[in-house]
Each structure stands twice: as structure tokens, then as C-alpha cells.
Image (cartoon, rainbow, N blue to C red; front, side, top):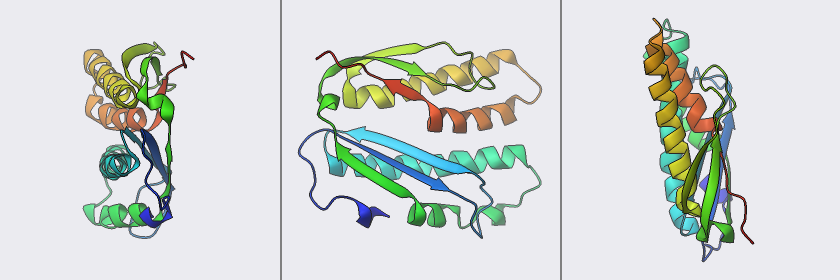
Length: 174
């Protein structure tokens, strides 16, 4: 997977994303696993993406097990290897990530979030991570406050959805 990346590292802030769609033998995750990362350079963004993808796999396993508690641990043994090997990865330099930004953070998932748009102000490459972190913390806080009987299951499913589908939009000031 990582060999697909550009051979020359970029000099400026970069954005990387990875997506994988299953199923595959040895991994009970169905559907998509997605991760993204931004950093000051492409190599740093690639490292951050590897870490983000590992976390996304862990969240997807937890969400799948929450939905289907009868699944055995053995059904997830090969998930990390299969997903990391087969994920489509794209990295590119994005000069706008070097600029201070006022960003809008949203999550279009009515089962997990009310639709409220959050905002964050930071340098662009930081704003994307910070926005996603704030949204996912707000989603979790909302679920805990709702205190449904299946709160643990909802938290696992929504943590996965939030990390994968939170959108951070930073309109350019140029």
C-alpha cells in the first residue's frame, strides 16, 4: 500500500487519505474503513495516516463486535494486515494547510449526531485533526447524556462513524 505513494516527498503541508472496502477472508469487518491525516510534510502525513488507519481498524472491529456480539475474536485476527495491505492510499501537498483557518466541522449521521455544526480555528493542517477530535468528543458526550440502555453499543458504532465521516471544511480566505 505505501509503495503507491509519490516517490518524492513534498516540501509543504500535506494531506493523506486511505480507504478500504471489505469483506475479505479472515476479517469480519464489512463495509468501508477510512482514515485521513494532515501534517507539515508528506512523510509526516504518511506516518500520521498509518497511525490513523490502525485506530480506524480498531474502531471498526469494536463497532462490528458491538453490532454482532456473537462474533469471535478469531474472526478479526487478519483485519489489520488485510486492510493495511489492500487500502487505497492517496497523499498530496496542500498549501492551504499552512494558513490559519476558520473551519466548519460537521457529521451527517442522525443516529450519532444532531446535525449541529461545530467550528475550530487553527492552522489548517492542525484544524482537520482538531475538528475531528472535537466532533467525536461531542458525539460521545451526547450519547452518554442520552443514557440509553445500549449506550456502550451506540458509543462504539458512533466512534467509528465519527472518525470516518466527520467533515472539516476550511473556506479559503484568499
